[in-house]
Amino acid sequence: MTALLEVEDLTVRFHTDEGVVTAVDDLSYRVEAAETFGVVGESGAGKSVAARSVLGLIDRPGRIERGEVRFKGEDLLSMDESALRSVRGDEIGMVFQDARAALNPVYAVGEQIAETIEHHMGYDPAAAKTRAIRLLDRVGIADPEARYSEYPHEFSGGMCQRATIAMALSCEPDLIVADEPTTALDVTVEARILELLDELADEFDVAVQLITHDLGVIAGTCDRAMVMYAGEAVETAPIEDLYYDPKHPYTAGLMSAIPRIGDGRDRLRTIPGTTPDPVDPPSGCRFHPRCPFAEEACTRTHPSLVDPETGEAATLDDDRAAACLEYTEGLSGGLDYSVEVEEPRDERAGGDPADE
Ligand SMILES: Nc1ncnc2c1ncn2[C@@H]1O[C@H](COP(=O)(O)OP(=O)(O)OP(=O)(O)O)[C@@H](O)[C@H]1O
Image 1 (cartoon, protein in one colour):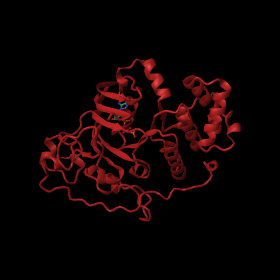
Image 2 (tube, rainbow, N blue to C red):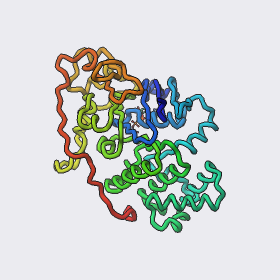
Image 3 (cartoon, rainbow, N blue to C red):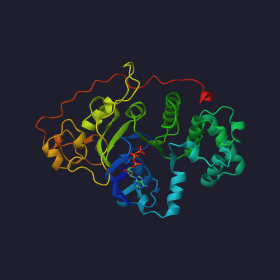
Image 4 (spheres, protein in one colour):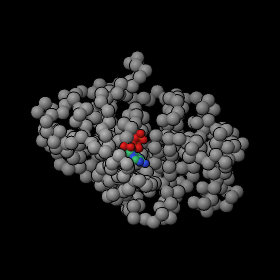
Protein backbone atom coordinates (compact mmCIF):
# COMPACT_ATOMS: atom_id res chain seq x y z
CA MET A 1 0.00 0.00 0.00
CA THR A 2 1.29 3.42 -0.88
CA ALA A 3 1.22 5.87 2.03
CA LEU A 4 0.03 9.44 1.55
CA LEU A 5 3.60 10.75 1.78
CA GLU A 6 6.69 8.64 1.20
CA VAL A 7 10.11 10.18 1.56
CA GLU A 8 12.89 7.92 0.42
CA ASP A 9 16.68 8.31 0.70
CA LEU A 10 16.39 12.09 0.88
CA THR A 11 19.73 13.89 1.07
CA VAL A 12 19.91 17.69 1.27
CA ARG A 13 23.14 19.67 1.40
CA PHE A 14 24.00 23.32 1.87
CA HIS A 15 27.14 24.51 0.17
CA THR A 16 28.42 27.20 2.53
CA ASP A 17 31.68 29.10 3.02
CA GLU A 18 32.41 26.91 6.04
CA GLY A 19 32.00 23.76 4.01
CA VAL A 20 29.29 21.38 2.89
CA VAL A 21 26.52 20.88 5.44
CA THR A 22 24.63 17.65 5.00
CA ALA A 23 21.43 18.80 6.68
CA VAL A 24 19.41 15.70 5.83
CA ASP A 25 21.21 12.46 5.15
CA ASP A 26 19.56 9.51 3.46
CA LEU A 27 16.27 10.07 5.24
CA SER A 28 13.27 7.82 4.65
CA TYR A 29 9.85 7.94 6.28
CA ARG A 30 6.17 7.73 5.50
CA VAL A 31 3.08 9.57 6.63
CA GLU A 32 -0.22 7.71 6.37
CA ALA A 33 -3.48 9.39 5.41
CA ALA A 34 -5.16 11.10 8.38
CA GLU A 35 -2.42 10.27 10.90
CA THR A 36 -0.39 12.71 12.93
CA PHE A 37 3.28 11.97 12.44
CA GLY A 38 5.80 13.65 14.70
CA VAL A 39 9.36 14.58 13.81
CA VAL A 40 11.42 15.33 16.88
CA GLY A 41 15.04 16.18 17.60
CA GLU A 42 17.26 18.95 18.89
CA SER A 43 17.92 22.15 17.02
CA GLY A 44 19.96 21.52 13.88
CA ALA A 45 18.82 17.90 13.50
CA GLY A 46 17.44 18.63 10.03
CA LYS A 47 13.72 18.59 10.85
CA SER A 48 12.90 21.86 9.12
CA VAL A 49 15.04 21.14 6.09
CA ALA A 50 13.29 17.77 5.70
CA ALA A 51 9.89 19.47 5.94
CA ARG A 52 10.83 22.22 3.52
CA SER A 53 12.07 19.64 1.03
CA VAL A 54 8.63 18.05 1.06
CA LEU A 55 7.18 21.44 0.19
CA GLY A 56 9.79 22.16 -2.47
CA LEU A 57 11.04 25.13 -0.48
CA ILE A 58 14.78 24.54 -0.42
CA ASP A 59 16.62 27.55 -1.76
CA ARG A 60 20.26 28.13 -2.57
CA PRO A 61 22.77 27.38 -1.13
CA GLY A 62 20.67 24.32 -0.35
CA ARG A 63 20.30 21.46 -2.80
CA ILE A 64 18.35 18.25 -2.76
CA GLU A 65 21.06 15.87 -3.84
CA ARG A 66 19.19 12.63 -3.83
CA GLY A 67 15.95 10.95 -3.01
CA GLU A 68 12.24 10.94 -3.75
CA VAL A 69 9.33 12.67 -2.09
CA ARG A 70 6.21 10.84 -3.25
CA PHE A 71 2.89 12.41 -2.43
CA LYS A 72 -0.04 10.17 -3.39
CA GLY A 73 2.47 8.19 -5.42
CA GLU A 74 3.81 11.16 -7.44
CA ASP A 75 7.36 12.39 -7.00
CA LEU A 76 7.17 16.04 -5.99
CA LEU A 77 10.87 16.53 -6.65
CA SER A 78 10.41 15.93 -10.35
CA MET A 79 7.48 18.37 -10.69
CA ASP A 80 7.94 21.82 -12.16
CA GLU A 81 7.46 24.85 -9.95
CA SER A 82 3.91 25.63 -11.03
CA ALA A 83 2.65 22.06 -10.54
CA LEU A 84 4.36 22.02 -7.17
CA ARG A 85 2.83 25.33 -6.19
CA SER A 86 -0.62 24.02 -6.87
CA VAL A 87 0.02 20.85 -4.82
CA ARG A 88 1.34 23.09 -2.05
CA GLY A 89 -1.78 25.22 -1.92
CA ASP A 90 -4.40 22.62 -2.76
CA GLU A 91 -3.24 19.43 -1.16
CA ILE A 92 -0.54 20.27 1.34
CA GLY A 93 -1.06 23.06 3.87
CA MET A 94 1.69 24.67 5.91
CA VAL A 95 1.89 26.06 9.42
CA PHE A 96 5.13 27.66 10.58
CA GLN A 97 6.70 28.68 13.84
CA ASP A 98 6.38 32.38 13.23
CA ALA A 99 2.73 32.76 12.35
CA ARG A 100 2.86 36.53 12.21
CA ALA A 101 5.62 36.40 9.63
CA ALA A 102 3.61 33.89 7.61
CA LEU A 103 0.79 36.43 7.27
CA ASN A 104 1.09 39.40 4.98
CA PRO A 105 1.11 42.51 7.20
CA VAL A 106 -0.60 44.76 4.66
CA TYR A 107 -3.71 42.63 4.06
CA ALA A 108 -6.53 41.89 6.46
CA VAL A 109 -6.23 38.39 7.89
CA GLY A 110 -9.63 37.24 6.63
CA GLU A 111 -8.96 38.55 3.14
CA GLN A 112 -5.76 36.52 2.96
CA ILE A 113 -7.68 33.37 3.77
CA ALA A 114 -10.46 34.23 1.33
CA GLU A 115 -7.91 34.96 -1.37
CA THR A 116 -6.36 31.52 -0.92
CA ILE A 117 -9.78 29.92 -1.16
CA GLU A 118 -10.64 31.86 -4.33
CA HIS A 119 -7.32 31.07 -5.92
CA HIS A 120 -7.07 27.39 -5.06
CA MET A 121 -10.69 26.34 -4.91
CA GLY A 122 -12.23 28.57 -7.54
CA TYR A 123 -14.82 30.11 -5.20
CA ASP A 124 -16.33 33.48 -6.10
CA PRO A 125 -15.37 36.32 -3.73
CA ALA A 126 -18.57 36.26 -1.69
CA ALA A 127 -18.49 32.49 -1.17
CA ALA A 128 -14.78 32.64 -0.32
CA LYS A 129 -15.45 35.30 2.31
CA THR A 130 -18.23 33.22 3.86
CA ARG A 131 -15.96 30.19 3.99
CA ALA A 132 -13.08 32.20 5.46
CA ILE A 133 -15.33 33.53 8.23
CA ARG A 134 -16.58 30.02 8.95
CA LEU A 135 -12.99 28.80 9.22
CA LEU A 136 -11.97 31.68 11.51
CA ASP A 137 -14.85 30.71 13.72
CA ARG A 138 -13.89 27.05 13.63
CA VAL A 139 -10.31 27.74 14.71
CA GLY A 140 -11.65 29.57 17.76
CA ILE A 141 -11.46 33.21 16.76
CA ALA A 142 -14.25 35.03 18.53
CA ASP A 143 -16.38 37.47 16.54
CA PRO A 144 -15.02 36.23 13.20
CA GLU A 145 -17.03 38.68 11.03
CA ALA A 146 -15.34 41.64 12.69
CA ARG A 147 -11.96 39.93 12.94
CA TYR A 148 -12.09 39.13 9.22
CA SER A 149 -11.12 42.70 8.39
CA GLU A 150 -8.41 43.10 11.01
CA TYR A 151 -4.72 43.11 10.22
CA PRO A 152 -2.10 40.69 11.56
CA HIS A 153 -0.71 43.30 13.99
CA GLU A 154 -4.16 43.44 15.63
CA PHE A 155 -3.98 39.72 16.38
CA SER A 156 -2.10 38.16 19.32
CA GLY A 157 0.51 35.46 18.62
CA GLY A 158 -1.95 32.67 19.42
CA MET A 159 -4.62 34.28 17.20
CA CYS A 160 -2.14 34.57 14.32
CA GLN A 161 -1.37 30.88 14.65
CA ARG A 162 -5.08 30.07 14.67
CA ALA A 163 -5.45 32.14 11.49
CA THR A 164 -2.60 30.34 9.71
CA ILE A 165 -4.18 27.04 10.70
CA ALA A 166 -7.43 28.27 9.14
CA MET A 167 -5.44 29.23 6.04
CA ALA A 168 -3.74 25.83 5.91
CA LEU A 169 -7.11 24.09 6.16
CA SER A 170 -8.91 26.38 3.77
CA CYS A 171 -8.33 24.26 0.69
CA GLU A 172 -9.15 20.96 2.37
CA PRO A 173 -5.63 19.57 2.08
CA ASP A 174 -4.71 15.94 2.73
CA LEU A 175 -1.55 16.89 4.61
CA ILE A 176 -0.54 19.75 6.85
CA VAL A 177 3.13 20.28 7.56
CA ALA A 178 3.42 22.10 10.87
CA ASP A 179 6.96 23.23 11.72
CA GLU A 180 7.29 24.09 15.42
CA PRO A 181 3.82 25.68 15.35
CA THR A 182 3.78 26.48 19.05
CA THR A 183 7.42 27.17 19.91
CA ALA A 184 6.92 30.93 19.90
CA LEU A 185 3.85 30.75 22.15
CA ASP A 186 3.57 30.48 25.90
CA VAL A 187 2.78 27.12 27.45
CA THR A 188 -0.97 27.55 27.98
CA VAL A 189 -1.53 28.94 24.50
CA GLU A 190 0.66 26.14 23.14
CA ALA A 191 -1.55 23.53 24.76
CA ARG A 192 -4.70 25.06 23.28
CA ILE A 193 -3.24 25.32 19.79
CA LEU A 194 -2.06 21.70 19.90
CA GLU A 195 -5.47 20.61 21.05
CA LEU A 196 -7.04 22.57 18.21
CA LEU A 197 -4.70 21.00 15.62
CA ASP A 198 -5.54 17.59 17.00
CA GLU A 199 -9.29 18.18 16.81
CA LEU A 200 -9.15 19.67 13.35
CA ALA A 201 -6.96 16.89 12.00
CA ASP A 202 -9.69 14.49 13.06
CA GLU A 203 -12.56 16.58 11.86
CA PHE A 204 -11.02 17.41 8.47
CA ASP A 205 -9.50 13.95 8.09
CA VAL A 206 -6.13 15.48 7.34
CA ALA A 207 -2.68 14.02 8.03
CA VAL A 208 -0.24 16.21 9.97
CA GLN A 209 3.55 16.12 9.94
CA LEU A 210 4.32 17.86 13.20
CA ILE A 211 7.86 19.06 13.76
CA THR A 212 9.03 19.89 17.25
CA HIS A 213 12.04 19.71 19.54
CA ASP A 214 9.75 18.72 22.41
CA LEU A 215 8.98 15.06 22.92
CA GLY A 216 6.22 16.08 25.34
CA VAL A 217 4.39 17.74 22.44
CA ILE A 218 4.76 14.62 20.31
CA ALA A 219 3.52 12.37 23.12
CA GLY A 220 0.30 14.32 23.49
CA THR A 221 -0.63 14.56 19.82
CA CYS A 222 1.00 12.04 17.50
CA ASP A 223 0.22 8.51 16.32
CA ARG A 224 3.78 7.75 15.27
CA ALA A 225 7.01 9.65 15.40
CA MET A 226 10.51 9.79 14.01
CA VAL A 227 13.48 10.93 16.07
CA MET A 228 16.19 12.75 14.13
CA TYR A 229 19.79 13.31 15.10
CA ALA A 230 22.40 15.10 12.99
CA GLY A 231 20.43 14.81 9.75
CA GLU A 232 19.43 11.18 10.18
CA ALA A 233 16.49 9.23 11.52
CA VAL A 234 17.68 7.31 14.58
CA GLU A 235 14.32 5.85 15.58
CA THR A 236 10.76 5.56 14.32
CA ALA A 237 7.95 4.08 16.35
CA PRO A 238 4.29 4.26 17.25
CA ILE A 239 4.08 6.91 19.93
CA GLU A 240 3.42 4.62 22.89
CA ASP A 241 6.38 2.41 22.03
CA LEU A 242 8.60 5.43 21.63
CA TYR A 243 7.52 6.79 24.94
CA TYR A 244 7.46 3.65 27.05
CA ASP A 245 10.10 1.57 25.29
CA PRO A 246 12.60 3.76 23.42
CA LYS A 247 15.10 1.67 21.49
CA HIS A 248 17.69 4.34 20.77
CA PRO A 249 19.81 5.84 23.56
CA TYR A 250 19.22 9.31 22.09
CA THR A 251 15.45 8.85 22.36
CA ALA A 252 15.90 7.66 25.92
CA GLY A 253 17.98 10.76 26.58
CA LEU A 254 15.27 13.01 25.14
CA MET A 255 12.79 11.28 27.44
CA SER A 256 14.70 12.33 30.48
CA ALA A 257 14.50 15.86 29.14
CA ILE A 258 10.68 15.85 29.23
CA PRO A 259 9.42 17.83 32.17
CA ARG A 260 7.28 15.46 34.23
CA ILE A 261 4.20 16.58 36.00
CA GLY A 262 4.80 16.99 39.69
CA ASP A 263 8.55 16.53 39.65
CA GLY A 264 9.14 20.06 40.79
CA ARG A 265 11.45 20.95 37.94
CA ASP A 266 10.75 24.01 35.93
CA ARG A 267 13.68 23.66 33.60
CA LEU A 268 14.36 21.07 30.98
CA ARG A 269 17.15 18.69 31.71
CA THR A 270 19.19 18.36 28.56
CA ILE A 271 21.36 15.64 27.17
CA PRO A 272 24.99 16.39 28.05
CA GLY A 273 27.18 17.41 25.14
CA THR A 274 26.38 19.37 22.04
CA THR A 275 24.98 18.54 18.64
CA PRO A 276 27.72 17.64 16.19
CA ASP A 277 29.35 19.98 13.72
CA PRO A 278 27.20 19.51 10.61
CA VAL A 279 30.18 20.06 8.31
CA ASP A 280 32.26 17.35 9.95
CA PRO A 281 30.05 14.95 11.91
CA PRO A 282 31.59 12.26 14.13
CA SER A 283 32.65 8.99 12.54
CA GLY A 284 30.65 5.83 13.09
CA CYS A 285 27.48 6.54 15.00
CA ARG A 286 27.01 10.32 15.06
CA PHE A 287 25.62 10.11 18.56
CA HIS A 288 28.59 8.20 19.99
CA PRO A 289 30.40 11.17 21.62
CA ARG A 290 27.31 11.83 23.75
CA CYS A 291 26.15 8.26 24.24
CA PRO A 292 26.73 6.76 27.69
CA PHE A 293 26.70 3.26 26.15
CA ALA A 294 29.12 3.92 23.30
CA GLU A 295 31.84 1.37 22.68
CA GLU A 296 34.81 1.26 20.36
CA ALA A 297 32.72 -0.17 17.50
CA CYS A 298 30.41 2.86 17.67
CA THR A 299 33.28 5.14 16.72
CA ARG A 300 33.94 3.11 13.57
CA THR A 301 30.69 1.65 12.28
CA HIS A 302 27.77 3.72 11.14
CA PRO A 303 24.60 2.00 12.32
CA SER A 304 21.77 1.79 9.82
CA LEU A 305 18.09 1.86 10.61
CA VAL A 306 16.95 -1.69 11.40
CA ASP A 307 14.06 -3.55 12.92
CA PRO A 308 15.25 -3.78 16.53
CA GLU A 309 13.73 -7.25 16.95
CA THR A 310 15.37 -8.88 13.95
CA GLY A 311 18.28 -6.59 13.07
CA GLU A 312 17.11 -6.55 9.46
CA ALA A 313 17.22 -3.37 7.40
CA ALA A 314 14.14 -1.26 8.03
CA THR A 315 11.75 -0.53 5.17
CA LEU A 316 9.25 2.30 4.76
CA ASP A 317 6.48 -0.04 5.91
CA ASP A 318 8.11 -0.86 9.23
CA ASP A 319 6.53 0.81 12.21
CA ARG A 320 9.51 0.25 14.46
CA ALA A 321 13.09 0.97 13.54
CA ALA A 322 16.21 2.10 15.35
CA ALA A 323 19.78 2.85 14.30
CA CYS A 324 22.06 1.45 17.00
CA LEU A 325 24.74 -1.22 16.73
CA GLU A 326 23.10 -2.99 19.66
CA TYR A 327 20.55 -4.41 17.19
CA THR A 328 23.03 -5.68 14.61
CA GLU A 329 26.45 -6.37 16.10
CA GLY A 330 25.41 -6.23 19.73
CA LEU A 331 27.19 -3.98 22.23
CA SER A 332 29.11 -5.85 24.90
CA GLY A 333 27.61 -3.71 27.66
CA GLY A 334 24.18 -3.49 26.01
CA LEU A 335 21.87 -0.53 26.43
CA ASP A 336 21.57 -0.32 30.14
CA TYR A 337 18.71 2.10 30.67
CA SER A 338 15.19 1.87 31.92
CA VAL A 339 12.51 4.44 31.41
CA GLU A 340 10.21 5.63 34.12
CA VAL A 341 7.31 7.53 32.73
CA GLU A 342 4.70 9.51 34.50
CA GLU A 343 1.61 10.61 32.66
CA PRO A 344 2.33 12.54 29.46
CA ARG A 345 1.18 16.11 29.27
CA ASP A 346 -2.56 15.54 29.04
CA GLU A 347 -3.60 18.13 31.58
CA ARG A 348 -4.19 20.71 28.92
CA ALA A 349 -5.45 24.07 29.91
CA GLY A 350 -8.89 25.04 28.73
CA GLY A 351 -10.09 28.59 28.72
CA ASP A 352 -10.89 31.44 26.48
CA PRO A 353 -8.72 31.92 23.39
CA ALA A 354 -9.28 35.65 23.85
CA ASP A 355 -6.63 35.46 26.60
CA GLU A 356 -4.04 34.78 23.93
N1 LIG B 1 20.10 28.26 4.49
C1 LIG B 1 20.99 27.48 5.10
N2 LIG B 1 22.32 27.63 4.87
C2 LIG B 1 23.22 26.84 5.47
N3 LIG B 1 22.92 25.84 6.32
C3 LIG B 1 21.64 25.65 6.61
C4 LIG B 1 20.59 26.45 6.02
N4 LIG B 1 19.41 26.01 6.49
C5 LIG B 1 19.69 24.99 7.32
N5 LIG B 1 21.02 24.75 7.40
C6 LIG B 1 21.71 23.74 8.21
O1 LIG B 1 21.04 22.52 8.09
C7 LIG B 1 21.04 21.82 9.32
C8 LIG B 1 19.63 21.42 9.69
O2 LIG B 1 18.86 22.57 9.97
P1 LIG B 1 17.31 22.52 10.34
O3 LIG B 1 16.84 23.91 10.41
O4 LIG B 1 16.60 21.58 9.45
O5 LIG B 1 17.33 21.89 11.78
P2 LIG B 1 16.11 21.71 12.75
O6 LIG B 1 16.19 20.33 13.26
O7 LIG B 1 14.84 22.08 12.06
O8 LIG B 1 16.45 22.74 13.87
P3 LIG B 1 15.62 24.01 14.38
O9 LIG B 1 14.64 23.45 15.33
O10 LIG B 1 16.67 24.86 15.01
O11 LIG B 1 15.01 24.64 13.16
C9 LIG B 1 21.68 22.75 10.34
O12 LIG B 1 23.01 22.34 10.53
C10 LIG B 1 21.63 24.09 9.68
O13 LIG B 1 22.71 24.88 10.08
